[in-house]
Amino acid sequence: MENKEKQPNKLKLLARYYKPYKGLFLADLFFAILGAAVTLVIPLLVRYIMNTIGNMPISEAKSAILTIGAGMLGLILVQLGSRYFITYYGHMMGAYIEHDMRNEIFSHYQKLSFTFYDNQKVGHLLSRITSDLFDISELLHHGPEDIIISVIKLAGAFLILVNVNGKMAAISFSIVIVMLFYALIFNRRMKHAFKENRARIADINSQIEDSLSGIRVVKSFGNEKREMEKFAKGNERFVAAKRLSYRYMAGYHAGMDSFTTLITVASLVAGAFFLTDGTLDAADLVTFLLYINNFTEPVTKLVNFTEQFQNGYSGYDRFLEMMAIAPDIEDAPDAVSLDKAQGGIEFQEVSFHYSDTNEEVLSHVNLKVNPGDYVALVGTSGAGKTTLCSLIPRFYDVSSGKILLDGTDIRRIKLKDLRRQIGIVQQDVYLFAGTIMENIRYGKPDATDEEVIRAAKAANAHDFIMEMPADYDTDIGQRGVKLSGGQKQRLSIARAFLKNPPILIFDEATSALDNESEKVVQESLEKLAKDRTTFVIAHRLSTIRNARRILVLTEDGIAEEGTHDELLKKDGVYAKLCKAGL
Image (cartoon, rainbow, N blue to C red):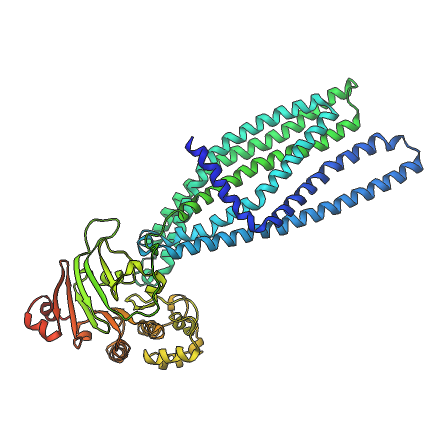
């Protein structure tokens, strides 16, 4: 009962995508009806020619034939125009709807937090925005017109066949009823098989995306064979899912073809009997046989529509599943705007654990950072340094406690405004496919070329950029594959320079640089950090020796705090890290 209630609601939601294109949709249906009507009229003209024109005088018959021929030519032109309209404009309507849905789901992707992406595969997300939406748009385009055309042809042909010979029409219609029940049974089975196919296709996409993105790692370890084995397993699961759906599809299509032929054969045999006993004339038999195609073709089209419906509807199910995932980090109802922060940050009893575990990464952390403070975070891997900094821009929300920015709980500040105050250079640099200029400008989309160049100079990137084939217009390839690690890192730092925020987070920002580059960039970072609240997650302790405030994180929270010299004197965790050569 619950499923029956849900389905109309889903169909109602799906139908709302027609609203912006109502005029195009109605025009598409009009020309579909017009085309179907033409198909029904032509056999009636054939019947008229056979029954009437043969009894006319020759001169009158020739005139009538020419008139009817001209009329048929006109109908063909109408059919041509109708077919062109529903093929071109109907498909364009489907493309517009697909465009709108793709915008909707991509926009939704942008709202979801790191927690969501921690548990998702890119291939699965990609399949929802490509193949799923294509199938949905095909359903929305072809579905209504196929139903309209089929109903008109089926009802029209049936009424005409009844008028020609009621007994033969009853025989044909009884076979059609059995044909529909047969199709219904097989399509119910195909629905589940198609849904499984989509899941397997998403797995394959994810596997390919993962393998190709890491192709350099694969080749460096010589693991091509292992990747082929992993891919082969996924491919086998895909074939197994396809095997079941094709088994049902084979039974469906074979049965439908047989039923179509059976209707023709039954009509021909019955017509022959009626012809011999004089209850049917030759013209009516020819007319009946011409209409048999108009009678069976819409049945086949309707049943094919059910297959298309399963594809599109299962795709829409997956679309709705994704759209139903509410962003776990969003603006509070009473969120306030923030133009320019001073940069004061305070952690009050902050604890954090990831959603899929109760093991706390941070526990009851208390920390106050004044505007303009330069704070270095050190500690062993897994101590929560990156996590602590990820809580400030609300990439994750605290499990308990609160974080204040200039005295206001960051959960009460609009996300867009909050993140505009923070510049981040991450350990794992991500550069987009495009030019150097475009990647630096990502820090401030409306920046002028001069501003971009100044930011590059500040990040010590200008010199190597000018040595590139097209300097700032050089295409850097997917993920910056044409650049060295140090060059990518400096472009990432240039983005932060360009953004020019009051709060900075450097997550091991110089870890990919050689000693010479690190020294120059470190000077640039310190210049950028002047009068800004700065958090530096240190990869090498040598980079933060001059920091006025060093926090040592352990699994138990902030274990030590002080300058480099003060912490060495304590001979605690920090001193041990220094002795370990970090």
